[in-house]
Length: 346
Image (cartoon, rainbow, N blue to C red; front, side):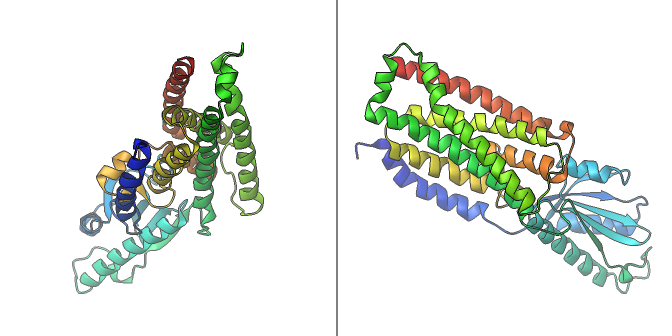
């Protein structure tokens, strides 16, 4: 009862977990952003677009003016599905970097189209031969629909958080418990150098893990690195700094290894897994969880890895992810170092 943080974890975290599992874990398709390309707009294209939007499963975000805009729309992350109307029928083009979600989205859209076709079966006013149209489906970036294409980016983010945040915080707190931190602080070495020495091994371990996962993904799981390897490594190093700063921050607010482990595993890992888009699409979550999901750095890292590794986008399409992670790294590392120096010098 004297340990307020442990009581808080024991009583509050089960409630938080139930809420997260209850609302975030969902295989349903809801509010999936989609775009439409219709060279010739008529009553049929308008009706079907409205039908997709009114279903509650899709949200129209953009009307494309040319076929070339489709690739750019996916690379910017603006849409998960593009519906193309042409003289030959209807084409469904999905972003299959997440194979399971793409398959679900296409099945929902196909079902809506089929239902609409049946309703128009007896209509003689239809401007195109809707009855005979079978939607043509095209999966971009992952035509084989391999789950590893979505699994690898998520595992990368999860492993790096484990190594950086959890192990760093536990290591520093262990020094406090053993009393060796005070011995180090009375030495001529400045606190900042002690802290850097403590986080350096985990920085090296993170690089080793990053290298091993990338090698396994390419040579064992057959997941290619389509984009720039340099850009991918740069983004990963930035994310590692964010994780290390989180670990230092946790070590400043707890006094025991158990508390550090609980906070790292429960408070950081659960939101990371559920709210980063690693397991379930963010678009299908309630609005409040979508807003909260912008806080975990894993969301932006996973999105960046998918764009670079799977989609092979240019640098301009991942500027947002770099900017957000860079801001997080700067703020968290500055605050962590300041708090560490203040705490250790008292």
